[in-house]
Image (tube, rainbow, N blue to C red; front, side, top):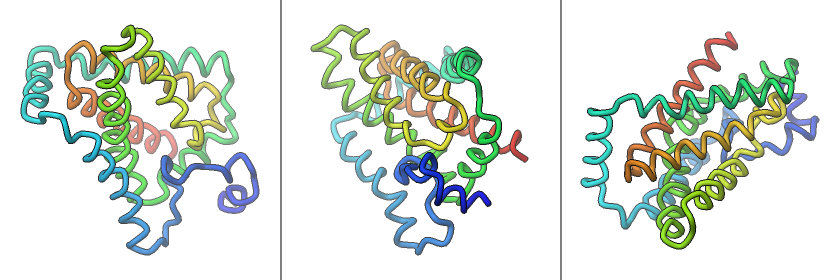
Length: 209
């Protein structure tokens, strides 16, 4: 039933395979390798100029002294979710389907929790941040990066189930920018993103079954 709807319903048919977990479960190993390796290779290319040693030291210093910062993003997105999903009612009939699509294959889980968060932070909170923060007001960089971060999620399966999903992602983008800008550490933003997505996946799995 789910597979039939996914293939026939135009709302589901346009799901972007690069940012979702809807890669067919019986794909050959090469397809799964490319699915995971491509964003990793792009991430490494985007982070070539980053001093990982210094960046990790800054992140560790913040975590030891102010561990609460890792809760900023989940709280921001939880608040955004409550507000926006109240203003824009949830499609209850599609919530279970969206949850199922998010757990299709192990490769998809790895992408959600690890690969894509680090890739997205490399794009928005490192590559784009470094190239814009000295040329534009910080509020413009924050809003612009959060906007494009939101657009990157426009084909995710949650969109059809929760109209408030995209504005919630925008709020999350602002929170990630704050971490990157306030503490000067890409690694801190990336770790926060990984933990946030891991929490999201855990809660999705718990509530769906």
